[in-house]
Image (cartoon, rainbow, N blue to C red; front, side, top):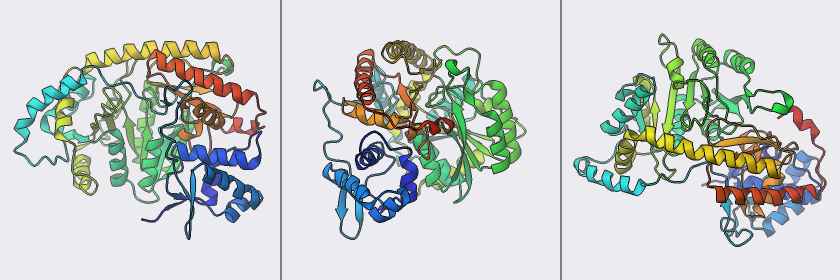
Length: 485
């Protein structure tokens, strides 16, 4: 298999503003190291040649060679004859030890711990398995009882749905990738929010899409900004770019935590309908309503019945129940469901039956599960907000009324530096640019509030140590980024 090639132009774009108070080669090596660690540069990728990259950055070749050498010495690059410099994750990178010997704390994943009693649900589901053992076990659409349970769940939330409109998938990410592969042609435009869930734009790009973005911002009381979607840009992008698909997370948007107002949903749906754009609505965290005012139906409920097919809804139990329970679903019109089922076998042969039986049982108790999870999230959110206010009074921390994350404005474009420094203190946390493209969002950090109080305290302690180390060194003058982010 040939290696993924990262061009000099693409790597420059990923770097963003990488210069810091340290020497140029060390700062460059640090930024490339972060890009490898958080997945923006995949392992086994070939970096650009030293000469090409130095020309692109306007640096001496000696500086780039020194940065590559530092990465090789640390185990992040290897030199392969005839292949150049290839990226690697050092053997110890995933087993680093934090201060105090408690191991690395991973805040890169915004997900709740497994639901209590999940093992008991697995045992009960196993009792339902015998009636399926006479079948092949290859299930590309979903067992009838689960499709019916998912449809019932939509109906109870105010959206009329039939089981034939449901396809069961191997989680929400599988659903997004399958939809992108089926619905996009190479070069088609796809609308995406910025910032956004990184694996969504990766899936759209893998489907061949050219991304066009619209901004979503967190509220900023100090600047008098309410936050939310840039509606003017969103409607203009739909009209002028005519995207084939648009990926939106309108309820408790990840990472900003914002909710799209009902009247705005109706205008966006009308604009998408006029252009023939299909909106992919990610509802994986849409029911994590902590204390949001007003009543909100599923996004598709606001669509004009005269324009069917404007929305495709994506859900899963990965956030509500457990990430290890790989079951998600697509709600769409019947012709698209049939098309997806026909195309699926090229990549997988269906969702595991036992896990589907587990989710069928869980959906019967989903209102109680959601209530329990929202109570946990309320406690965790309040705890995190108090801790950040005490330790980082200069940070602007928006109050969110649901979801699982908050989008913190650091006040300075140092998110990547902070993420690297936090690793030295036992905390894995993605830098702001992980949620954007072209190096944006260096002023922001996504902080999840899914974790218990003890782990949150450890994370805040690590951030305080990392922040203190940054403040002891001069920061780069990158004020121009304020206009970008």
